[in-house]
Length: 357
Image 1 (spheres, helix red, strand yellow):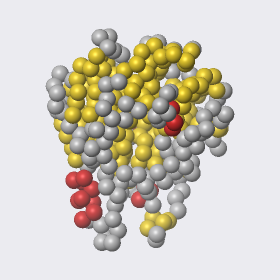
Image 2 (image 1 turned 180 degrees about the vertical axis):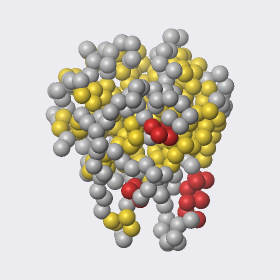
Image 3 (image 1 turned 120 degrees about the horizontal axis):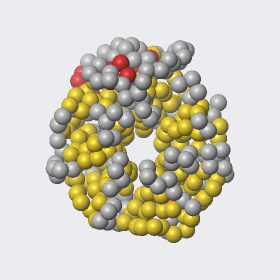
């Protein structure tokens, strides 16, 4: 059962982030931004002028009181101790920003927008150092790779996933998710059944920096490995009955959280595939055995997320019937325990404990 953090925001929450000191920030529709204590108490509140949706929030890794927030086409840098005035403000994107990502050295901030562009903001010189334009539709998600401050991955509603190195203005590698989706549709036994297009919604990079995941509208999650200047797909499996809105690797692990438009939150362990060619980024720890989640049949067919054949013999470690479309997922420690924080179509944050992991 989830603990609900309430009393902060009235609009649907769109994004979440947590500081190293367990302070949580949430952004919502209508320009609302909120900070929360680790016990779920609302601490600070503000509303950006113009009432543009707050689509992404990021705490500084070096200064826990500094917060980056995207709202509309703008980026504001805030001090969470006083949210009234911004420390800095940038308007470098031409259309609404969907996602922000900081590199580990915190000198570069990437912002992906509705035009398909990714702007790379040099925070030291306060100017755009790169404008990456290759997505032909909305760029929905971007993520710097840990341990590689000049490298990032992106995905978009053009069904493309890209690997970038900022020393070049063009992507090093591109894959189109439509290709494997078309092959799957041709192999379907039921010719009248159509899959949703593989619009790519979310990317997440594991702490090792070489493994990343992508969630798409076709309900599938794909796991890629970076091999120098190109990538290989290690794994692809049906994770949700509807589109995968969020993917999120837990820190220092190959445990992957996925959230979907079907209202489910699922935890997967992709370590066997990830460790096939490289060592795990953390020491092996004993994990308790978990019960296999139960699923119901829909339209006469067993839910695809439970069949070994469909998802490459990977089974969920945990499945939660959240009940609401997932807008954002965050794995973070609160009071020393690992938790899943979930934002959905409500103004509440749901907190699920992961003590057994």
